[in-house]
Image (cartoon, rainbow, N blue to C red; front, side, top):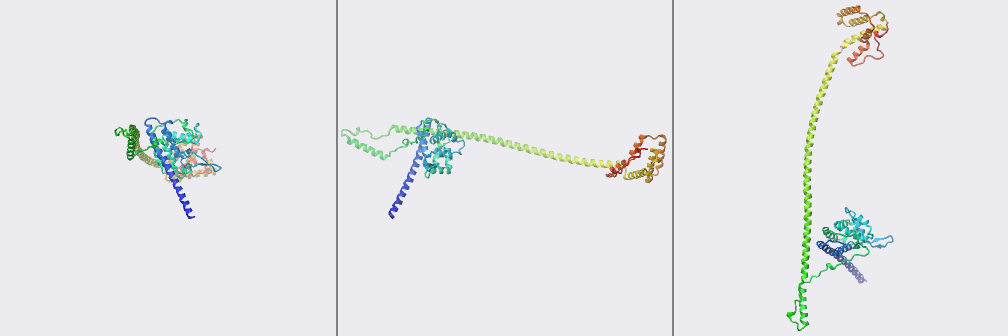
Length: 448
C-alpha cells in the first residue's frame, strides 16, 4: 500500500511537471513566433504597404489572437455551463481607460456581429491608429480585470506580457491600410498560425564535411568507369543563399535608415516645440516684469495721493476749527450783556403786572409807554441815572411834534414784547426761558 501511494504521488508530480513544461513551451513558442512576425512585418513594410492581402500581417494577426486567447476563461451561464469566450470580451472592458479609444466604434459596426470578428476588427483599427501597444499596456496594467478573465499560466498573466507590449511598440512606425469589410473579419473559423516562414535549419561545419565524405564514398563505389576528376564538388554554397543574405542585410539597412529619419524628424519637432516654449517663456517673463514695474509705480502714485489727501484733510480740519472759533467770538461780541437783558426782563415784568391790575388806562399814547419803560430801566440801572433826564426830554419833544398813529403801535409791541427779550436771552444763554403758556402779547397789539 505504501509503494502504491508513493507511485501515485510520483505519477501526480510527473503529470504536474509535464503540464507546467508544456505550458512554458507553449508560452515561449507564441512569444518567439510573435517576435519573428513583428520583424517580418517591419522588413516587408520597407518595400510595400501592409494590407489584408499581406501574408505577414495575416500570420501576425493569427499569432496575436492566439496569445490573447491563451488560457482564457469561459463564461458561466445560468445553468452552470461554461461557454467559450473571445478575447474581445476582455479587451472592451480592460481598454476603456484609453483616451480616444475605438471600443464604441467597433461595437457599433454594422457588418461585424460576432465577438471574434469584433476582436479582429479591433486589431486592425489599433494598428492603423498606431495605438496597439498602448491598448495592450493599459489592459495588462488592469491586473484585477486580467485575473478575472484569464487562468493561471496565461501569457498575459506572466512575465512574457511585458515583452509582448515592448515588441508591439515597433509597429507604430508602419503605415497599415485595411478594409474593415473584408473576409478577414469572418469570425466563424479560428486563426491558424503558419510556422514555415520562421523555421530555419543551419547545418554545422562538421555535418557539412561528413556529408562531403559520404558523397565521395557513394560516388567512388557507384561506377568503376568514373574517374575522380570527373566527380564534381559534392557540396558548394548556392549563389541564391548569398543573394538572400545580401537582400536581408539591405532590408535591415533601409529599415535602419527609415527609423533614423523618423527619429531625426521627431527630434526636430521636439526641438522646434522646445524653442517655441522657450520663446513664450521669455515673453511671459518680460510681461510679468513689466506688470511688476507698472504695479510698483501705481502703488507709489497711490501712496503719494493718499499722503496728499491726508495733508489737505488736516488743513481743512484746522480751517474749520478756526472758522468755528471766529464765528463763536463774533456772535458773543455782537449780542448785549446778560445784565442788560436781565434789566429789560424786570421792566417787562413790571409792565405785565400793571396790565394785570388794569392800569393800562393811564397810558394814552406810545410815548407814555416808552417813557415808562425807560423810567423802569433807569430806576433799576443806577449807571444810567444821569442820562435818564436827557432821554426823557427827547421823548417829550418827539411826542409834541408827532401824533399817535396805529402803525407804530405794532412796531413798539414787537420791540417791547416778552418774546423778543426772551429770544435774546435764549441766544445768549442757549436756554429757552419762556414757555408758550406764559408768553403774552404786546400792549400795542391789544385793542384800546
